Image 1 (tube, rainbow over the protein chains, first blue to last red):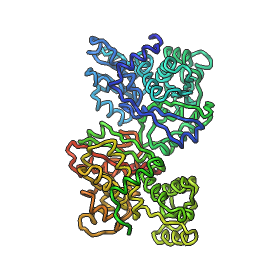
Image 2: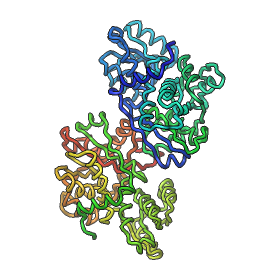
Image 3: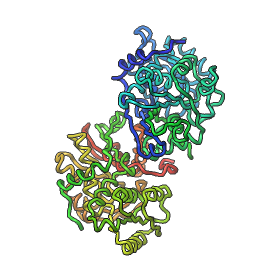
Image 4: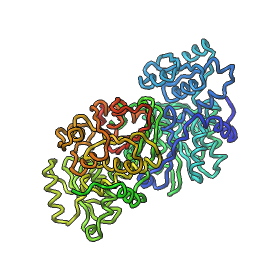
Length: 316
Length: 316
């Protein structure tokens, strides 16, 4: 396990990656505020390169490799945003990326990874097959594994979104972020702890994948039991590293139902005219459904991404 | 018929409405530029109040009524964005709005108009029924009819989007806008004629509703024959007034197919993560399919709106 990152490390990471990532917009909507009963500020990582905050962490982690390590490239297994993020970050550094993807991964995601010039190895769609295939790829290539969240450099990169949000909108009473493996909420919480210590940091999870909630409340790490949530980015379990960050720096974790997620997502599409993926609707749903008492205060929300299959919308 | 508006009138209109409308973002995307072979700047009227540029014209036209006329309110018939725009503009001025809507209008649009406090009268879904019902409403209430485009005050208001676009992005080689009744393209062209006379103004229409194209090419006004286009905002014909503006100030009109519209719309949703309605995809489709030779130049596109039924997407 790597060490828990510090606020200083996140600041340094931000200075290293700021020219390589988009400084995404922070936007708000009167109609959303009326429904929420507070002032919401959306940090739009759906407008980030590859369409998700994951590019921040990947850019930082790939950038931190020594020249010697870097020349053998990087590797990861993912069917989602992290795969694209690592592929593009490697392309931008000019090194190979090896991505293990389940053979049933959506074609649009496979094509995106391929467009970034990555080498793709397909495997069966089980955790075990992914891991053993990745091991074989690393054995063969000497590439460095870039874990999607159990990696302190990744967490530092993800924290840069909160730095930008707090620069653009100082004095937030809350910052909310979705919790999957915990990389985003960890980076967010550490960034805020140094930059805006009075801001409360709340993680939000789907009820049906509430491993972080259970871990936080019991003080003992629980693996995720079900992965049957519409928020496909949040089906992973915390690692020791992210759990430790959360215990130190996160104020609370709350959960929302599947229907609350879908309703919130549709409301944002209809009223704000932006495409957010289901994972991004999770913290919005918490505010809309009174899971957090915001009392007309200022709430920053990290909109994690906007990648989804437009052929299968969850309300259809 | 009202007189063709002048550039000065559009400037004045803008100063009157600027505090009441959103100054919408101008955004761009590397992936869109790669596909287009030029530098595209999207003026995002999908982020405007009521989700469409129509609020600019309605705000101006409602604002120009004398106190005496205003007290009897305003009226219009529309199943689309103009109805919401007039309803909200009237609400903001504190006067009644009477909206005639076809009985088969989408519930979401009826609810939106009702939420703005307008009085709704339903009628059969024919042009004749709409007009006779509107006449009866006006007879009864003394309200002033606000036509969606055959009204010089409306055209002046619509032109304010191009003023903002050219302020944010001077030196555009082209500005493209969709053409329905012609209010948007007229205001855009007159605004650019004074503000940036070297900018070429191109209107874009669906092939299957190409009345403006035929009128422009023949010099004689043609009514629209078919209304069977996915771009539901563009099913109307030019009026004498808008045709006259177009003849004076628009450089060309080109057309795109239904499939080109749908493909362009999906590309923008997927890559830019913003929701644009089919009418807004019409000028994008023209650039993507080489209908205009943009030769790596700078192209402003007025994104007309983002209102659509998320239950029935055109690629499904």
